[in-house]
Image (cartoon, rainbow, N blue to C red; front, top):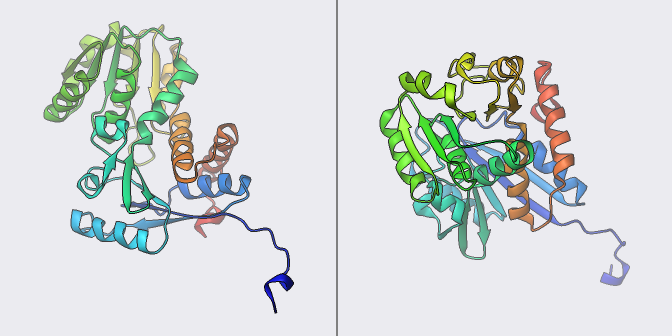
Length: 305
């Protein structure tokens, strides 16, 4: 058969992405990306690379990055516990990743590996959409881990008068406060959990960046009864969407923001970095909402069977 005789089959752009981290097999990120890729007419394949205990070392992750590039991956998302492990392995960091000191997205650009942090941009976009007009003279951030660092960086770029960071690990909160203070126009300080009762009553907003609220970590990280009804309450947790914190805050009359927007925007930002194509964010949010709802039924979703 000659080339001229080949059937006319429309060629689809092929995109191969992976997610590296511990316990990532149940992640909703793969179906989110693949559904968006399908809307763009792409052959978009997203695979999880679940690390076993002891495999989160710099040496092992470095081999995974090299293997992924050799096998033709276009890029990778990375999550706990290797968001910082990858830093010395990369050739370049985007501004958000450099500020936070953590990476969740790696794109292969020729022989270079470039790290991005779409958790920062994802929270920022969700905040602007939902709470962009809210007062923020005093905002309290509870949790100074990976999610907290991203939230703190996003808030620092949004004219917060004073950002108070609380964490059970005093050193971690202090380190994050010092880092964010370098790029913030407002005051940034760290406190311990026992000091929350002193600052929450005067807060214009509070953000939960701890695991509290997830199915495996029920409850809330702080007493929402201390938060004034005029304040906003935001949560980075989105599985479940309606956390105990948000239910209680809404009952108090507070404006609330769930973690769905951040989760969607960080995925959409990564999709755009990987493909160079604009993501349909409204459709991606609808996809994520449906995916979470299916998961909540307890029936194994089709992408996990």
